[in-house]
Figure 1: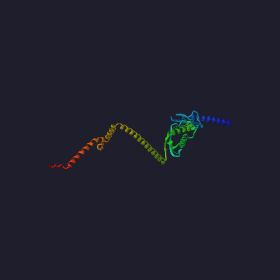
Figure 2: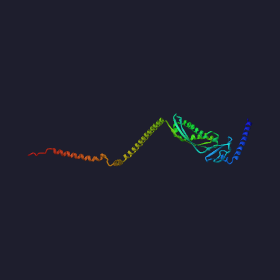
Figure 3: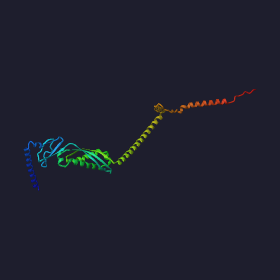
Figure 4: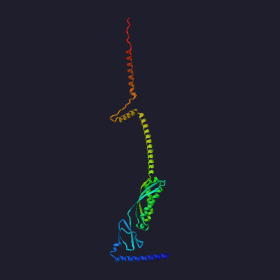
Length: 292
């Protein structure tokens, strides 16, 4: 079997050499018209993978610039090395905690090895796109909803690593993966909004209670300071009055301490006694002298 295989290989080499000579003869006979067919040009961002009699030509991909092919026995394929963008369509995914979400992403990739991308896979671009869709569904199905919503960057990096490892044998280099959007069902959105609102109200109540607690402590300390100095209470009272009097039209009730009024009240009581005595004297009948 080995000898037969070697014979077949030698026969193929012999036939290839004969056909190559004939192709060169055809080029020489039809010159200069054959030059328009034999010379090809590829751009700076392109490479040409040449097959001669069905086999890859040694030397790898050609380009950029001018390259030469033989008519009838050579075939070539152009490969674009520029970065391509693939917008993954929305994928319906069931998360780890049994929530159905719709996720879409963007994949940026390019051909890193033109020869491998032509020889090892039928359509490298189509294969990469299908793999990106399945990888996105698999990764999202292994994570709960809160991780999908909060850890997009880590999910993108993990997906990029998986895609780059799988497409390396295809001559494809995945440069970047970005999770665009995560769409939730309407009922779940309403439930999450209600939950978030309740959590915000609970935090607001806790913050208000803490503020009241701190304010009460501050008031207690202030009352202790004011209690040590009666003048401080009077100054505080005057400050409050000055704040009230900012408006043009205002009515102020000014209380007077009783210790200021007590001496006057005593004097008023003495005057009342005098008045009562005078009235009583006037009401008395005059004394009539008795004749002796």
